[in-house]
Image (cartoon, rainbow, N blue to C red; front, side, top):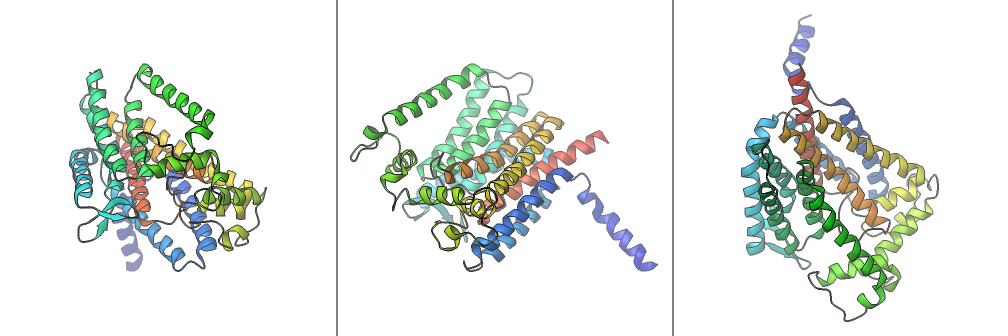
Length: 384
């Protein structure tokens, strides 16, 4: 009896930590994590300790999610400015003292090797949500201009490294906050139209624009090559186009139901480069087919819809903007990764959430989930 009372007393002490956790969101994440572990076991069983490390990274992300979920949105708001300033300061330090690998300066040695750009995936939406919360009720065009500047500074520093994939994710996360804050359509439509026209011109004049010796302004050579390879992977089938070609072959060979768990020939004969990281979706498609892909996409769609529902029900403007932006981080990760693997977007090195191997990205996802859980908990506390 005393033991039973002891268990009840222990549960009463820890129950408040779990109270308010969003069940549907947790279920979606759990199912995607299971899919990630299953896939990693198949593609990484002969790839060292990738499966064990992937499981460890998931546990770390889960712990981070749990800790962040205990922080109220009010305290998250208080962290916005310091975290943003820290992130930008570290990006400047990277530009001056950073470690260069494979032509990119993205890392900083502060006792351990860190990639400061990852911090900005959370710090930028936090900062912009704080900015608009402080001006709730009397927003002016100048406020949106300042928000654009707050977004442009870290994005420019990340592009300079260069790290186009992370820059795109930070840009989308920040731009979503500005959009949700009420940016007028007249400021959104023109740049979108310019982008569409530019893409159409590139596609229409691809033979001339991608000819040897032609150099595009603004873009680095490797970025230009990625776009040209996307338009015509066969121009360099054994070099720049190899990733895209092998990814599309693997996706197509999976058919309706796939070749079966651990039966993917493209995967296990090592035709798919980076099969445990950026191109793991190709391996998943080969083994689980169209049906598996539809179920995986349905999992991400449910996660995004649940996150947007949390945003719509959030009690403050800061919480709504932050939850909406963080939710779109998951959408951006999934859309960009699946798009680049299937050949409809350039290869930019963006992992597939919960599926791809990578500790840094998993930490970022754990923080994002913790923020969503915190906002969901605050909504329930307000209602009660």
